[in-house]
Image 1 (cartoon, rainbow over the protein chains, first blue to last red):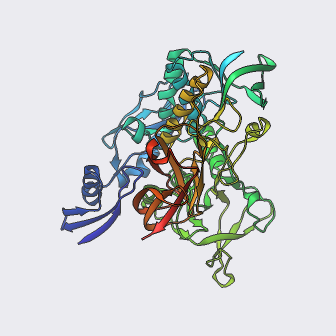
Image 2: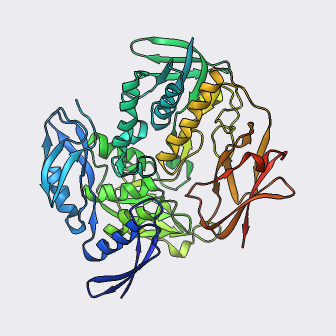
Image 3: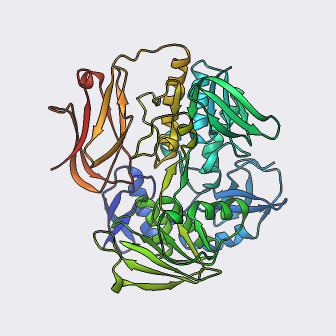
Length: 114
Length: 411
């Protein structure tokens, strides 16, 4: 089967044409770099996304966060539910782990808060 | 008297300050109106920044921190919460803050790095009264990402620039329903990756060649009427469609924020709405430089940082009295190439010229001529208005030209 994808790895946004047989990717065309091929293979077998959001802090403010690795795409909203019920203790530095394990990834701070 | 004053502590201002410091001018002052350095990056919590500059994908606040850390390590002075009121033609800066009151600084050189602001709904002439629930995409971004408020639950977005696309995903993740993103043009101004991961991932329809023709509701937005537009971008009445919603976000372009450039009597371009500059990013006023989104709106912050380095280094040369300007070559464009930055070349050295095109063109040659003869040519499979292009010209190529002419030739 043929599938058209837009690569989301970098701002180039290559148009990818992917040939699949059952669950296996047999050919990828249109990618400018090797990362495009990896993206196409993942996207057809186990699509993943990085989540960025904010977590409430103990002083009522917000700190921006991200998953340190991409998580399965279909878990995005469940991941948001975890993020939205979390309260982070101040002070927070960039890279601090806010939640230990969400679908195999850590939620880490992307901002400093005193 | 200060050597170098930089107006704006966003990515452009910080990068220019670091470049100046590392090239030998340590008397640098950054004036920033917000309470933090980083500018608009602080509210851009999504990732995708820094691939070009750092080879990894960072969020906005992380990208800003890379520079802020360096500004702090070098001990570059910053005045935060400080509003610049005026920059004069002879480089006297008038500013105000709660500690110093109103104060003036004479600078040897000034770098303008004030960034840009969003074009508002008022610029668009849409029928309807003035209900609550209408925001620019950037305002909504600030509410959601910095204040923790969700501006509405049922959303229609006008404009498919990157900020609109990013906010479609952000509002969806926070529990709102985005019913449509309407785009007046037959193509999106945003990056393909953002259409994929911000709209397609959440089944949000992108309605190309569509606009909002009426906003319904008196106290609060109750809905919008959208319509398809013809080739002349006029709404087609028969195609009207009503979408109930409580919130409308406008993502309809950015405008360089040049009030201070005007007060300094810097020549502005009617096309970029930013200063006219040479390869050093020096404006028409000697010793005043401009870089980042105040000069022209960039697609990637990585390019803002690079441009600001050019301005920072050039300001050092200016302060040190190296004025090896010996030529004056204006760069003109054919309209298909909408503008170039720089707009003039004043030094006989290799130069990277950045440009934007006015429409999507496929299989074109970018030609640089002296009016008679093509001096340089580069093939491109596809060029689009949303993607800044560049060519690097060797000094031998343009040394003898009186002017340079940038054009697109369709093959």
